[in-house]
Amino acid sequence: MENARKTEIRNEIVIEDLEKNYGGIKAVNGLNLTVKKGELFGLLGPNGAGKTTTISILCGLLAPSAGSVQIAGFDVKEDLSKIKERIGLCPQEAAYYKFLSGKENIELMGILHGLDKATLKNHSAELLSQSDFADKARRRAKGYSGGMVRQLNLLMALISDPEIVFLDEPTVGMDARVRRRTWEYIKSLKDQDKTIILTTHYIEEAQSLSDRVGIIDYGELIALGSPGELMEKHQSRDLEEVFLKITGRRIAEGS
Image (tube, rainbow, N blue to C red; front, side, top):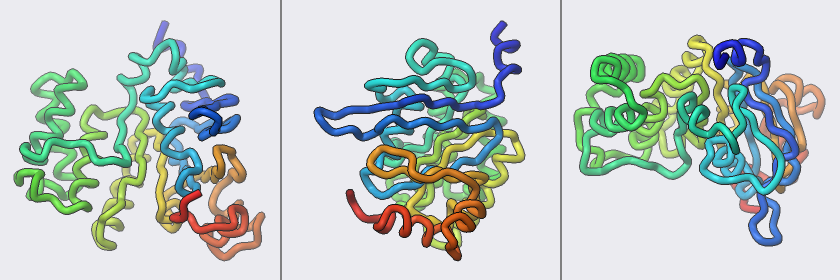
């Protein structure tokens, strides 16, 4: 029954009239959005626009104040355990154990997802080889740079081979060379038919990686389309110019 239910799904993520209130402040204000299976969707907005709050609701870390969210056909309020089996999260705030090595952190996350020893070993080896992180993974995470911690958190998010991956600022702190390599790695996830939600402060990153982009401000969706469509609609040379035109402020500024 569950498999039959999933084959009927055209949209992997369906958000309807989503709200999140903190006192009298609406961090998310009537958000409506769908993300297709296998799509890499970029979610952009200035600081405080509601990006991380939205991601937290999609992952079940926060309860919505109103509206509904379905992930892979399951309601986030009613079927959260089924959703968590299918998702991986690379959070904005780094989450790892400094006294463990990178490899041990990755494997611990796999254990928490219930992977058996053989599967865990295979997934870990494959991730480390694909991401060019194997040498770094032998070191204790306490000595990692900020960029290395972001790489580690990305691999921890992928160890369970999730169908849906939430990447909240995944390349913050990486130098330009590592960031570009990480872009290529993120692109490769699409070849595995994974659905990816990406938030980023690097607008060129969203322009390079995303099939579609949604721009939110003050908790509301104010633009939606492919990077090319948005640049054409707003007569802009790049996505950053689009962003500045419709928000009136740079992405890194607070609200």
